[in-house]
Amino acid sequence: MIGKLRVWVRIILLFAIYYFCICSTVKAQPGNKNKYGLYIIDHIKNFRETVDADSNKQMLDVRKCLPGVTLGLRYATANNFMHQKLYPPTHTTYLRRPAVTALRNVIEELKKQNLSIKIL
Image (cartoon, rainbow, N blue to C red; front, top):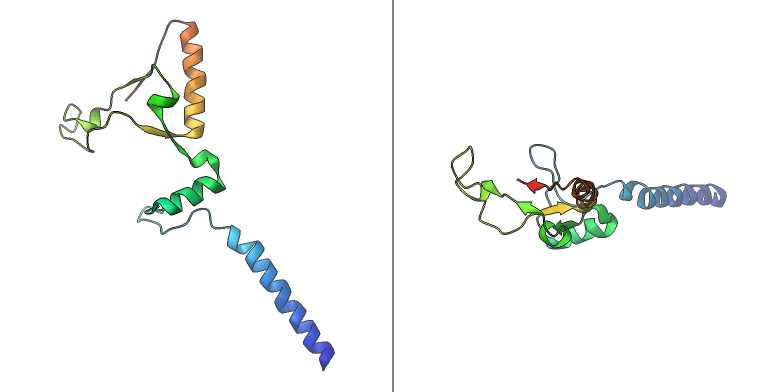
């Protein structure tokens, strides 16, 4: 009887270890999904947890990271094809770390040809 109990305790223990070590880490981001299946991060705490888990999800200020880049944020004004403001006026925009890195590389190559880039 005690032998069977030990077997069951081991099975339960292994299942618990499996669940907490493997299944609980599968969740990519905290929060709920919207109707398009995208995760909604509605608290700064959830965003920080996401960035701590994957630094590529960090949002960087384009003006600070890519000095000299021209920004044409038309959708913050009525001067766009929709003829209306789609978001509040802003002086900068944010991109994830891999996008900033890729743009930095492009900008360096363009400078060699006396060209620049404008982000719309």
